Picture 1: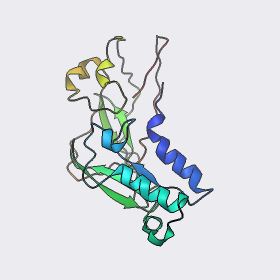
Picture 2 (picture 1 turned 90 degrees about the vertical axis):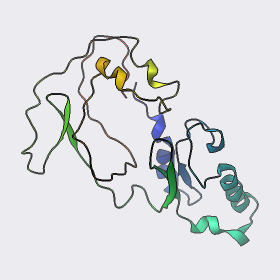
Picture 3 (picture 1 turned 120 degrees about the vertical axis):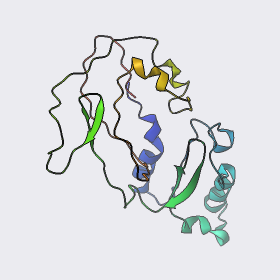
Length: 193
């Protein structure tokens, strides 16, 4: 099973925006709930109900006197600053224009390594990493995918975990993470996160 649900808001936005300007999207840590009912500490300054009232007043009640909502960028994006805090900001387009891609490859010793443009640092990845199937591993991930689960390091011994060198520069991850993985399994059910 591959989880595509997490990207649904941006997918809907990308397709609907081609047809109508009557769309805004809020991307935040809400996990199947309105921001007000989330246990994810959605940060300061966001009132989901007030935003909906503004939207419906503009489009359903023709209250165009106060149409500031249409002067705002289409995307409201939550950016984490720590595990439990973050800030909201507007973006005027998706994908974000200043984005750049960082490609990393699985390597020997369960390391993630970057490939230079010439490919000089990519090692020969002909080795195979194996993992013994343990049906009880993975349930600690929480009831909802993406929910807060606490420290997962105690479970690393039962998983294939690839780590990069320590990242010292400030990095913002906003958008889709794309993973290309070749796997062979010996069981009927597969879940990749």
